[in-house]
Amino acid sequence: MTILVTAASGQLGRLVVDALLERGVAPSDVVATARDTSKLADASARGVRTALLDYDRPETIAAALEGVDTVLLISGSAPGARAAGHRNVIDAAKAAGVAKLVYTSVPNATTAQFVLAPDHKATEEAIAAAGVPAVIARHNWYTENYVPDVQRAADTGVIAASVADGRVASATRADLAAGLAVLLTEDGHLGEVYDFSGEHAWTYEELAAAASQLTGREVRYAPLSTDEHLAALEAAGLDAGTAGFVAGIDDGIRRGVLADASGTLAGLIGRPTTSLVDGLRQALDAA
Image (cartoon, rainbow, N blue to C red):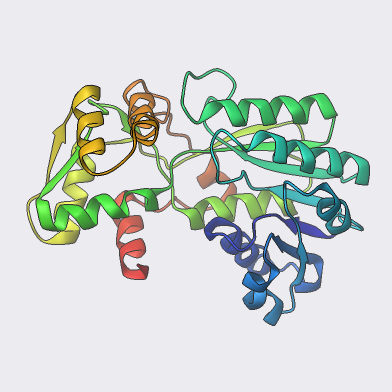
């Protein structure tokens, strides 16, 4: 079985390659792909096959998929402009007759009014329409996303957000990568939609407490209204569109889009997922 990983030069993709090798997949059975193959030198040095794959260049996708059985489609990094590239991968996977396509989506992708949902909704619908054998892994927020908040809090003693008392069931990239490796290597799972999250949905009060523990100073959560948040973001130098996007994420959190904690990921990887404070500590140590 040959497993292709898209965006393998990215933070999640690199960890998926690691997780596949840790599960005993032969390096020659893994194809790590990226738009810039020079960024895959570390994978190549381990015996992993590498290939050019650009979501926006269908000819590179078709070439990379030759002889591939299983594909991990890691969602692109440009919100609002991802769906077309995803469809290119889906179409190529169908044409190549792949046996399994795994896609990284977001919680409640097809039902939530969430600034990040439209691309994922369109992609999930495209997968269904194409009839490609697939598994959807809906990823909650990365714990690592909060490293900048903790770093700022070391100076300011404050984590400010407009999430009110919203909760986040985050997981580390490494835990998510381990779960994806299971889906890619195990038989079955086809047709399933899995919510990948930590087992505990934490509040921003808990985030502030974790930051206090990690920084050695008292950190408090300062709740903002959406208008206050927008003003603060624009005062920090963000343009109105970017500020609205960031505040839109907090709006989704406030409404509970990321609050569903599930044991699904822990069950697949056979251990508890990494706690908020431990995940942040690991990420800070690596920063």
